[in-house]
Image (cartoon, rainbow, N blue to C red):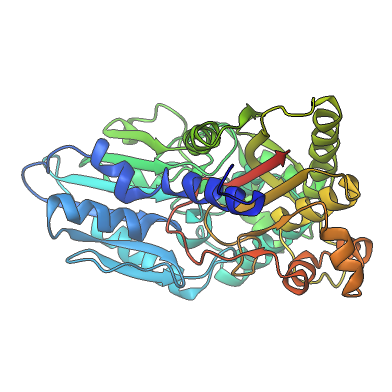
Length: 420
């Protein structure tokens, strides 16, 4: 800490966590030699274009198609990169997904498919189930995102309204051999929830998907209701059409937290990793971890090493009417700011490792002991910003946003409290 300010250290911890999940660093350790014969590369997600770039750096030009978020494309030699909308799907994603399915049809047992899957793939890989239109999927997705439903429930519904999720992408390539490489952005690293499990079977039912919609009081369009009552194409775990697909997680939140912890220790800090799968309403979790940080701070002895509290996972936000510009990480941090109440010696950072928190092109923000005083001096009201889900505008005015741009990876939220 001799040459780093608290804010500098927090930024470096975040950057280290992101770098640990960079596909250019991760894929060379797991990819192996290029298989003989025809090789087709497909993929979807915020990290998928970077993953494709990494593959071609090792295998040379490849045939294939990958779908990523607008602004997340990377130069590739042979693999086509298509950009589409996230978190609500659009027509570009639907058209690209149809072309991907066409590419997989008619493959032979001797062909090899490499699937590159990461967070964001649920929206980017979009093929509405038979009888559904894109507009109906958009409406359901937007309503689920605004409801505060956990991502596992959102993705369960998405699967049963899709012709490509829940193992259906792998089934489309059968009998070709498929290897799916996944970068996890979900708590618990369950492959069936990463991008809604396009290469993995799922034991949920359409009836469960309908109950999720009803529990969150979401108005179900008539065609969506009819589709769920008629069944879905989701494959059960162990289905024969999945027997030639191997799914491997190549990067996950725990690895990124471990990398950040190693840096903190190298800088002379004590470290407590509170878990890589902390979830819940953003404001509630922010207040809870802030109280924990205050407890640790009150127990510290003068002259002790700085303490870093690290955690990962995914917060949710239940939106009220007319929300402002916010996201789960900044809402977490704004709630923490109010709970810390200018407690001395405590700084914090919360940011999404994909560089995008909510719908804004901002990853998160940083706070310190003087943040409340600076906010009040600028006429900012933390309580009003939190109530109006307007945390991005609050931190923009405060000047403490974290804006790395597209990081080209995605291992979920990163949070760090620094206690001096």
